[in-house]
Length: 278
Ligand code: BG6
Image (cartoon, rainbow, N blue to C red):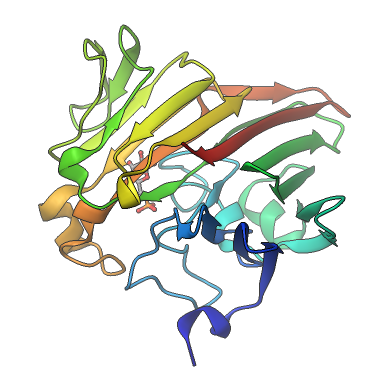
């Protein structure tokens, strides 16, 4: 059985132009074909067992980015089955699917809050759009962080660069969480790299990805951009990531992570990202 068929997934296609696979497990997008080529990195060692987070694609991080006292790193959204609530397949109208995640006994046993998360993956004519929202369905204040952990596929990390980060402050998780200021117009990655750039602009170009293409990543209401690559040594320690795969990927992650989102009862937080190819 091909590994992607071991888990339930939704397949979206917009004629021959674009397509996407989204797993019910974590609402994780595991492939996104735009202009004839899959733009997402998925590890050859990714585990599809409806338990583990999927190594690659776009895991949804909620309600906690990073380590957490209450549960596993990066929260439970990426390891929980979501419910498919809408699917549209008519390219003349919309090609999209919507997933929802609500609190239940299991989520409340980890994090005792009431919430409803909605996530829509839409294939448009020229881009893919990812709409994310969280509603506070409880009676108390809700605080969380969230992020779309996008793994982009690249030919060779040595040639990849990212725009839109010059002059910004970042927290370097490799250097003990200290804060620095970026001074490069084009950010390149040549080592174990784990930085949370703050107050980033709504648009980044990621140059020289797969097929030499430039990815246009646009985002709304996600003030932070995380850039991550484990590099050689850390790759060897990850059971679900090939030793040499770090040369074939870069994570550029749109999120609201430096400060939490705070919602009063009945309030909703909306954020989104768009991926296009230039
Ligand atoms: C990144 C974090 O977003 O995700 C890194 O900044 C982390 O610190 C990486 O190592 C991968 O996390 P995980 O839990 O999927 O191995």
